[in-house]
Image (cartoon, rainbow, N blue to C red):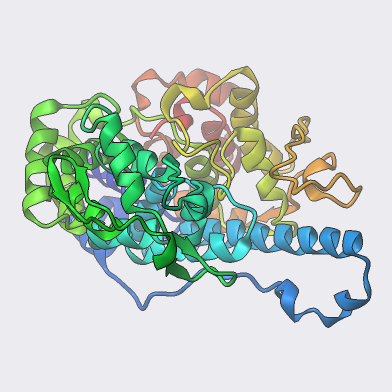
Length: 459
């Protein structure tokens, strides 16, 4: 097959997943994009992401400890469980067969952003977005809106009649559904009244606390009634603005940061008429000829997670200290479970500054053992869970995560091929002389040097 097919297939695998896996490079030549898309859409039995560290309530030995010791121990266990969730989510992206599910989950993880220290809450919302990742946006919105992580993060546990808290209602409209300009301050106030009483119990189970709910009549987005939170979400989903806002955000993430208004309007119309069927929307995007146009290829800066997962998919590796991968997430500015705020992570050029770009270009060499890691993460009390003790993994000075790469496997896969065509999305601006100058002409050094170019940062 022509180079054209390789370019199209690489593009699809990067956008609908985290790049080609080591065993897919051979197929880039001899499979059609439609075959790859069919494979991406295949669903397996759903498996939950979990952690192995025991919960605090199962540890009897803590009964003998002082309150301060107990608090410290609980923080330590929570931190370990959150680290496991983080790495287990990352490994799903790297090794999971359902690449599109994990890519969609990664998108929703940034869209429905929450930052809580309770690992049970993190586990629950992570699995809600993964389970519904390309199902119904309606179901996804309802489940996320009732999740303890979101209700806690956006203060709805404190939303009670006579003292409404507007934070949750505001963000549901501004960031999760319609976007600014499609509702008024009065709609926020009335929406907040409808969400009064929504909360959760100690176990994190959703509760509608009737005694705290405002039973009065409310006027919301032009409709009047004794609305509950469910009613408000249904009214929001009736608005075409919701379909337009979600479709535009998906287009900017999966296709191009510069919107094509005509295409987005058409996609949004189909999305609305389908009853918010995410799967149908994604098939329409990835099956369209415009998705494969040159202007949409190699134009997006990989987020840190996409960069890390992509390298791990290309280079078969054994990692002795996987927890150190969290440090790389932190150094590069994108740590799973810890978005900077409720708006999630910004994209595009915001990923690149002088320090992050240098580290990005050096990761392939550091992980190959060719150079040391010369950066250390800034302390962040929220991420470090208040722990300043010496054993705190995020405040040590780091070497590499102790990685062994199976270079024999890599050599076999790229034997007789030009690695540039397989690893770089847009080869036009690549200065091949700079790659060759540092190379000893082995496939290993060629791959490392290609992954260390600015062009490899794009997908």
